[in-house]
Image (cartoon, rainbow, N blue to C red; front, side, top):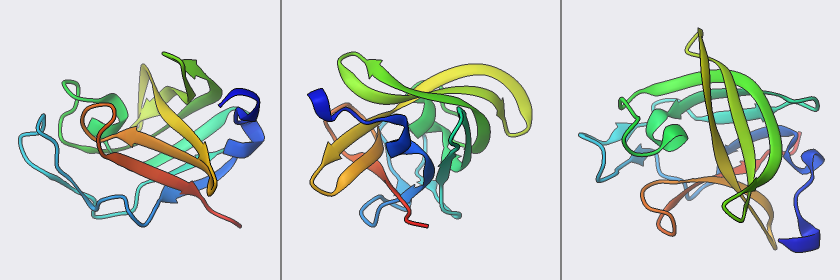
Length: 136
């Protein structure tokens, strides 16, 4: 993304799935599909705090670590690079009310429609679960 790299102010706000993100997560690594009964969301605060709600753990932690659960959590966030890609680093303090030391990242894409945050549903380069920033 070069000189157009996202800034923290591009991330601050509430993010919801875009209209093309699936309501059922099907993944070859899952024993069964995950139904999203409630809308997943992220709220990134102007400091470094974030809140995540109703997120499939397979999206957050990738194949192999999931328990086929919907999770919510909070912690600290920052913008950076991982493996050459722009990302939002998520360092969890709590998941489902329990203190935890765990971290992951959500990918950033910046295009004509603006900034999009996304997780890969299966393998990198395949289907994406995308979030768009809500205008308040």
